[in-house]
Length: 592
Image (cartoon, one colour):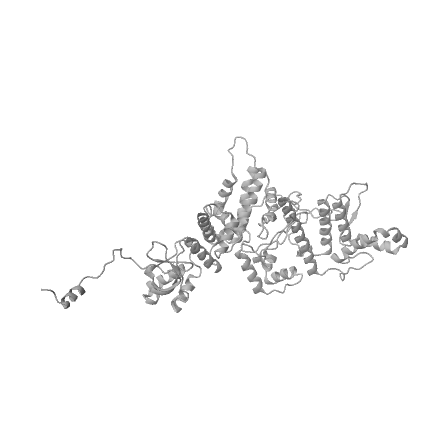
């Protein structure tokens, strides 16, 4: 019997549905565009290559804020290929750890589930994007240690080299990091990689306990300049095994492993130089001089290493005493200090007849900050002010913070004036500060003695003939030409003319010529030169006291203008040095 239509339809409707022959998907594919999601703590993992390895210094503050307000800024997440759980993408490991901690403490569901933004994983550059994102997130908040940044950058370099298939230069690394949102200069990258190579294996505890970038730069600079001194002077002794500089450096550095707060750069420098004396067969002061002479060439505006602050005599080797390491903004580009003239371990002060032979200890640095009262600190600051700057403290602070991101440390005037050495130059009267005048020499007699001795040293530096005599008037010295004719270089002649114009002797000679018409006619050709030389002393110094004329300062440059003139000279000398170096490297047609 033929089945009825109703029966046929019923049987067809009861047949099983179509089955897919492809395997069932374990989970849905990830979105291909940025997508908001609601995730739980069980589904979210921290970023496993996070450059931060120490506790966030603001951890407790962030935790309290999330406890009271909830998660105001959910971290972005992503998912790596092959992983089941999501991961923090670029910045947010601290917030994720706090959510886990708060959920364990309270059991509140608002800490267990959170809204976030999912961002797709880049199949080619995912690791680089995540790493540079974490670096930028942490670094812009100023929360990463220098060594953590350095290790993160080193990891990024490895990823870039893997991407490029070949090693990349520091300049190329800097360019790629900048393109990925983490700008940093090649010079600062070099310091980071040097810190990993030379410092991290020996003093990891010091670095991870917070050794600042200023002292790290000083350590690296000291290592480099000491190595240059080693290469110039080391000679293997007979019957001795060859000695490597890195062995000496690492052995000395390992003695200072510990906490960053206990690390004293001055003590390390003293110990390193002491260990170099025997293999180099040089004295402490000679090694120190060679090291400091290279500082200005090595660094453009980063701090120069501190010189030892002797408390005994110049004839003895200073031992590793304590020094103030708290200042973060040491001065820039001081003049290297040369060895002082030694007379039985003491420095003698020159006088007119060399009457006093009593030993006088030089005060090379201002007294320690903790030994100065508030009134003394204010007096010292006021003594350094030629003309006050008009930028606000907030603007200066922002300028220093922006420069610090690139590894540059701008000078802090107040800190430097109180605890640093703005400039150094050796001699019988060593210069430890260009502008500030110590109380012990702030009297006419001693000032004239110092001026005369400095004039002698300047003339001696250019091998100028003749003799400088101490006088009780004027600025303290007069020049006596040599009794016999001697050959004088142009540099020496110009230097002598400058010194004589400062002494006022040319102004006196000009006045005599102007009072005698017959002399004025004879000297007409050279009168203009006399007037310029005499006027130079006037605008720089003013009129010193002489027998027939009272001192006056009306026609000289103001203090602010004089400081700017010093700065012009300093910058112009640096400009010429750079152009000489550029022409040596690129040829005479490329002075820029």
